[in-house]
Each structure stands twice: as structure tokens, then as C-alpha cells.
Length: 207
Image (cartoon, rainbow, N blue to C red):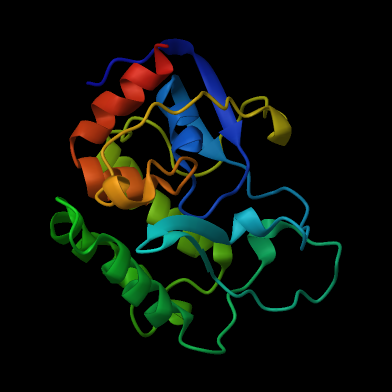
């Protein structure tokens, strides 16, 4: 069982697709964690359906298009994925280009293929479904299997108060060319460090 820096704490995080390292560091630090998809829909909150990776030329944002909600007074767990365009193919190609030469890309990418291949809109019609599918695989890789991937009954923290520790540089495959790029999706850490991602998160939470 992984060591938990704050075993007495629970945390309810804002909904995020392939969230950043800071997001999962917060989850790592607590005994229980989840994402609050019951928050009101806000089209300005792009981070709910967008994540950043390190492409060959620097940071690149990948966005899952969402369908127009029937009303502005809805929640994020009611938002459907758009069926227009092969965005999933764009995402897969971008990930292959960005991380194909990283040490652990081939080891993990097959686990994410259900979210990156044709028919994804049928498998995960809601944005929440897609995000939680990613989150489930990511948590399993990180050893966060003792925490639920869905919402839990606990007092949520304010969205603007998610712990944001200074990220110490970790190995990135193009660091010699681009320098260290912080605040990327957790996928960047996983593809570059693999199992050592757990050690990195543990050290980060104990700073």
C-alpha cells in the first residue's frame, strides 16, 4: 500500500480531463479523493475538457469538443461530447508525436486506446464518462486504487485553492531542446517516468 502523507484528509477536486501533475499530487496526499462533476457548467472553464502536453515544439493543448447544452443552467455531469469531427484521432496522433520516443509510451498507450479510437462518443457519451475513464486508468497506473475516481461525500475545497506546489524538474524527453515544461497533464509524467511517477508524487507531497 502506498504511503499517504495526510491519511486523515479527504479532498474533492474540480472536474478535469487528464488533469495536471498538481491535481494528482493533491489526490496522492490524501486518503480519499474525487472530482466534483456536480459543479455548474461554465463554458469559460476550458480546463474541464482540455489538457496540455509537450509536443515537439513546446506546450500543446488538446480539447474534447462538447455539445451545446440545452440550457446554461446545467451541471458539468450533464454535458455531452460532440459527435462532430475526428477529434479523438487528432488526440491520438498528437500523443504519438509528442511521446512516441519516451521510455514508457508503448508500455501504457494501449490502456488509453478506448478513449482515443473510433466509437468513443458511444462508449463515453458524457464528458464526465470520458474523463472518469481516463482518470480510472491514470489512478491505477499511479497506485491510487485505494481512492474513488468518482465524487465522494466530503467537504469540497474551493476550486482556486487546489495546492499548487512548485514542480521540481523531472525527466522530459525533449528537455535538452525545450527546457523543462511545467504544469502539463499527468500523462507527461507517466510517459516520461513510468513507475517512478509514484516516487515523484510522493516526494512532491512531502516537500
